[in-house]
Length: 175
Image (cartoon, rainbow, N blue to C red; front, top):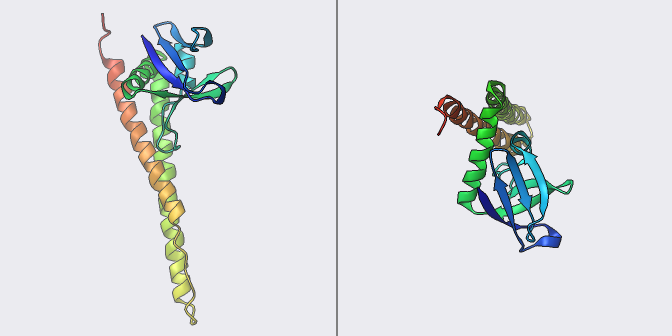
C-alpha cells in the first residue's frame, strides 16, 4: 500500500513523498522516488510516531537520514499507518501486546499520583494559610493536577489500544 505525505522538513517543504507499507516492512521515498529510509515491520512499529495530543504534535514522524522528519498525512492514511503498526505489535507476540498494557497502567498510575499530589499540596497550602492570623496566601497547583489528568487520559487511551490489540491478536488471520 502506497501512501502520499507532504514533507515538512525545512529543505523539502511542499514536496510529496511516499510511504510504502508492505508485509516485509516500510519504505519512505522522496519526491524523486529515491528510497530515503527503510524499516522492517518491527522497526516501523518502534520508530514511527503518530500525531499526539499529549505531545502537541500534529504530524506523522519518522526517522530519515538520522533525524526525525515530520510529514503531513491525510487522516485516512494515518489510520492505515496505525493499523500497520498495530499488526506489527501483534506479530511481535504477546509480550509486545503486554508491554502496551504495562505502559498504560504506568501512565494511569503516574496520573493518579499527580492529581493526588496536586490536590494534597493545594489543601495543605490552604490549611496553612487559614492558620496564619494575618491572612496568608495559598497556592493552587493547577499544573500538577492538569499533568495528572493528561497522564490518566494517556493511560486510558493506552488501555483501549491494548484491548484493540488483544482483539486483533485473537482474530482469525485474513486470507
